[in-house]
Amino acid sequence: LKAKRHADTVAQFLKSDDERLRVAAAWALSHMGADRFAPRIAELLKSESEQERLAAVKSLMRLESAPSEALCKALTKEKSETVLRALLEAVAVLKPSEAADVIVKRFFVRSGDRLILGEKGEVGRAVARALAAVASGGGKPVLLALLALTENADAAIRYTGCEGLGAVGGDLAKSRLAEIADKDKEPGVRAAAIRALVRTAQLGEKEMDVLLAALAAKEKEVSEAALDGLRRVTGVAGNHKIDMQQLAAVVARLLKQKRYDALIRCLLYTSPSPRDRG
Image (tube, rainbow, N blue to C red; front, side, top):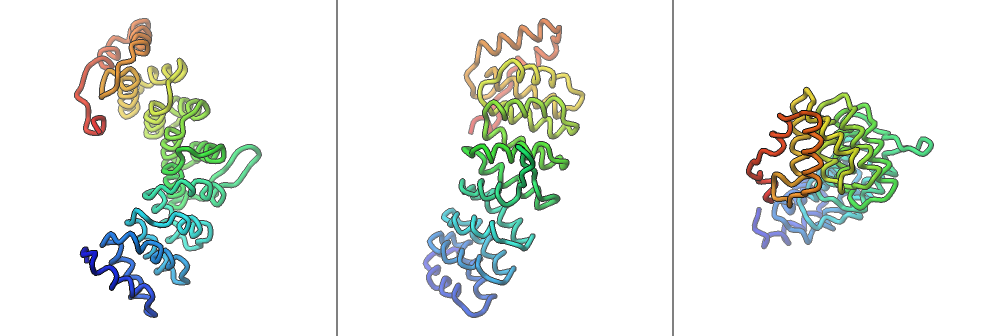
């Protein structure tokens, strides 16, 4: 099936009267990596058959040239929860930038000057993952939607919202991430907020104070995230350039607080992880 020379023959079955053959053809073409047939596979998104639409989405997810316009159009109309979740997963994988506004318009409702996620459970989590994946470069509506995710009752959604804010950056994102890192009841969410905070632009005193406070957290995942964050910000570890000003400020604060163990942990060198090297 991986022999691309057979793609033309297989593609003929996309027009078959038999749904099973159309589905099989879409599946086979996607596994061949036959990107040039992505638009024809996308035509199956218009099918009345839920299984055929689902097969089309899963097939397009494997093709780099999947037409984003077709995916976004399907996202606005799809009523099947199963297909909808697959579409959102495809967005998270393929990252079509235009999907961000589509997601905000379909899945969020306005309440005053805020947005609220209108979905719960697995669909809500799929919405969060998809939006976070395409949030970078998004406008104010996308930022408001990400902020809404961080206020959700579902910890998994808040976690993903933090990741999205880390990709977007900006003062509002930094402020919200610092608040979550300090106050969220779930350690995993606090750790995610810390990691996202470090990915934003230059951190100010408020954000550095949050990282320093998190070093003393009882929850290991929070304290480890703070430690890693401080070492990345100062450039002590990884392949980052050392920021002497930030490093001096961190050292001074820890010395003033007599937190010598935290100071040693922060300055202790470790080899860059494969992720850092990449």
